[in-house]
Length: 209
Image (tube, rainbow, N blue to C red):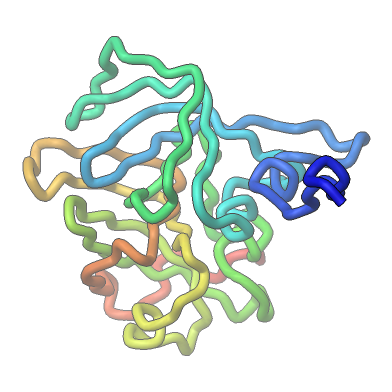
């Protein structure tokens, strides 16, 4: 047997696992803003067979592929640098924002799995948290079970990217750099501290009603 006789590798890759889709499913791009400690850019990411960015990021690891990546300055202003394609290590990502996502209001009937996994949607409540990374403070609504306490929230390992809605992001290096987004995914691995801003009250009622 020679090396030419060996069968082709069938090991799954990012592309074959997550960017392929059934013939009848139309692939869709999401416009995102991606922020790391030393990187900020606006780009497109293919959702492939997944209906939402949340689902894609919950099912992938390693590097993700983005397109039409325009580098941004620290204050969010676009630079002249555009890359047609870029591979980014998920571990280096602080958060991913969807600037054009619809704002999911409590009571709108949005699918609860967009904000968590499993459980009865009636038992989910919105609670406002402040999440701190090494470079940013993010405040927004998190959808949690009513009995989830702060310790359980911060010590959990799932989901890897925490979904927040109605989000305000402030740069810790320059508090004048303030940005609002309807939807953000925060990398749990980059989370340094968290605080509950409403004392456990349910400011918006139960989602999905």
